[in-house]
Image (cartoon, rainbow, N blue to C red):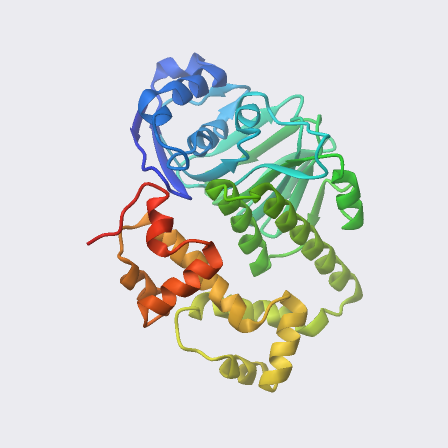
Length: 366
């Protein structure tokens, strides 16, 4: 096996692997052990490289613990694990941890660009897994029957059951996945109406990717109390799913429902423009005060804070994945004044832009 290249510190990694015929007979444990003992990777400083990012790209395209051989495999993969569990999560097929109420084991996202993938775990994992089909389609064997998941579908896999699912490149699947454990899982899932459900449909909501990317970021950055923040974000996700289900049953989406989903999607597109809250309110046919009230009621935050959150997510991505200077990132994300941008960024991320980038092994471009 030849690793053609990698770049440290990416929240989302593009991993390209060339598999020769000889790798077809190697087990997953041999391959992952090779990666985790490969000296240039193991020598990386903390947070600059997470082996789980590369291993997650390897774990997916195999069938019955064998690597698929022949040709080039290109997977856009991102995955990070709790430090307490990372080795278990990779090598021992999951974690059962009853000492915590709720703990995120690992979380990530994958999209299949040039290759299909089939995952088969006869005995499942020790932890729970929740999967969101964000784009495309995927085929899952659930309760002895094949289920084709589409965009907006969720798959909930309990511990110890058969995991068998396929992602076909022709269907352009993109998924988020999260593994979790703890003695409070049943209580959390029951309170959200998810207990006993192997799959359900919620449609796509802009907040889903915001929350899941937030959990990924917490596991990546590992700032103080990140497990607690991850748990809080996951509880927020289950609450949002419960709300969506309740609104669908009553046919009455609180505070505007589907229209607010549209305006949130519009904010995702226009986040770096000077479009004012008043303009969004006019498009919505409401007074500014009523629009702000209803938006906060539906999302839990004000329109301005929601837009700022989008800008900060984009800024963090650019700091980690490009060499653009802070001034250019400020401009790209909608800020004319780099000092004001830096102050807002520190408020949201806990670090100034330069310190944030340097903590991942990068330095600002001159």
